[in-house]
Image 1 (tube, one colour):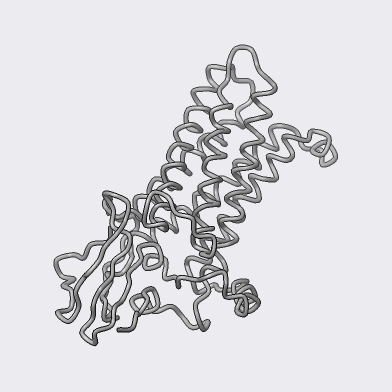
Image 2: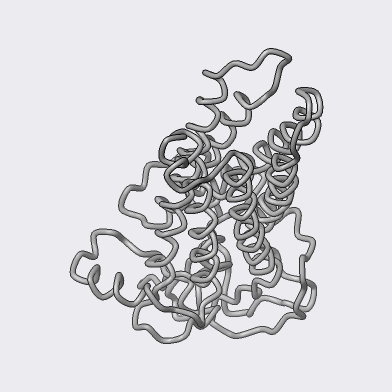
Length: 310
């Protein structure tokens, strides 16, 4: 939950009348203002500077898709772009692994394919750090739209903030994937060394990814489960969670034994491909999710909340 620091006193003309979220987190609050309208705070949308966008806004779809192609002034857009690059590299390496004849046409051997996996892990770590930096520097929410500054932090420490916790777990998981994919390029190691150097960081990283994806999902749902097919943010976290599940199942099949099991290897790579596809879809959806109402720069404490009439 995003709680104010002692210096972030709330305005006297507002009052929180409702708060919800999956225990022990608060992900949504409703404030009553003096006018007497109400304003809604939503954890994910406040942290990322997003509008709550409904996919039923078909008349705006064309404009949104065009504007989302180039938003270099928005950190969330860069996060989506960099995650997309990592997902594409993971998907490419998975396809090449599953189709040796296709890899042969490009004269790629197993070591070079593993290098593509490693190359894909770098954008994952970069995007995950940008997301952690974003969560560490979220502005305090003031219901009346007043701006409040905050000292910048490279990582932060907000373990009771569901968004920060999700980003932190994902960042550590990506670092473990860096070790996992780098160690996979080491030639001529036995099955025990493979498990120690490749499988252990893979399984631990996948667990952290799954925990991160689950936290991101329940943060957006404001509960442990919700079906919101009209919400683009829901699709972002839902497809991301599916990607995390794919990586988790892949890691379970990736354990090595003295006798290799080709079917297990194929299943592991196949689920890696599915995980990459899930992240690719999630990353691409982050681009239109980032577009605001009028293309103007985001103002943190106003556009992230909804104003409700009397």
